[in-house]
Length: 386
Length: 200
Image (tube, helix red, strand yellow):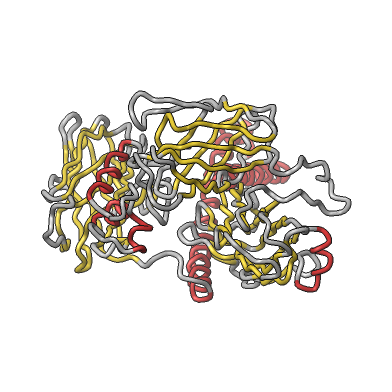
């Protein structure tokens, strides 16, 4: 009887334990990790470009991080590349948390940074709760000051990056994917020459900016030459690997027919086929799969598989056979919503510079019902094409 | 007892396993109910702490958007029913709003949405498992649109399936949001609610 009792108790405890563990695994095991899959963090420069900086003058930029979903960040790391022949690092300030001692660079590493041509940023939040990065505003993570060694065009790029947070179950999450902007200095668009750390396992990277895209665009509502230029953010998706580049900003100018031209450089594998994504200052993002796409009615071009082939050096891509639809006004959030419609409606007939910079979609020098109509006509699309 | 055990061994062990499963499930539920409370408190604390240190991130709620239905919340299949949204804009004049409405697309077909205010136009988007609406005040309208428990939109559904179902407004689903935009282009994040309906 005693043996039987022990057996009964053992079976009871084992089954109870197995059920408890099983339920915990099903509800809090894989599920929790998959919840965070697909989250992204956009890394950008503030200001977005530095059009002119004279020789021996300083330039200060901040790098901002904006997650797709609110996140409590415990630590972060970024590698900031610059061309050491054109820029000299001067100082840095961690704006979120403080430097991870012994891991991240500080002002005391000035000589080493300028010798290597990159800055290793490693910071960590100091509060027990972490740092709240929100999808609405993001945050400036770090401030960097450089001295221009010449006034020739160059750029600053963001290399390998990682952010991490601690989940409620104390597990570590660092599964974000990143979109990274490039800072143009003195009109430079090409990424600086890649410089890697001594003994780095990634020393075999291809030269940066091996491909230059000379692009032509047509924008909804602009049929003649407007005043001023326009920035279009462009990124490439490698069709075979599924890897996306960060956004590069192309500064466009228009001709008399309202065709906009500009360039952007990427460092990509030239044996692959690509999809190109283009997003203008007032436009929803367009997915383009062909080097010379066309459409029978404005805004109807759609595609699935990238067929754009690129060669090293200059590539001429004429996208003026389709139009970029307007409607996602600054501050852009990837969709046309009541904010965008209200922005135009509430500023009808205004002509001041601040208003025009936000809602003069057709660039005719006033915010009016034409702009409103353009936006309404894009509501069949509404969201950025992905 | 020993004889009883010998005679009904299989039944006894099955009974034992049943109780063990029952106990294991019970412990799991109890553990997760009690452990959730401190986690929620922590979450609230962390947001308060970080917001006091850092720049304000999540805007405070202002105004309300409430789902209501005129019928008793018991519906029959194949008969259309209407979900109304009643809004309060906290004294501010509204020129547009967005809605992200979560519902069960298997149990209900979305039929149409109509603005209750003549100077607002509705654009509807069926996103599969939720509905998104962009409602904008026409540029020609000059009158103020302060919502004070005002019915602003009617959304018509047709039930397909018996059961109890929830409709709820969500502050954000993918890129679609629920918000009110004022005539100063200020975005209000209203307090939202849900609605349970029973289909017989």
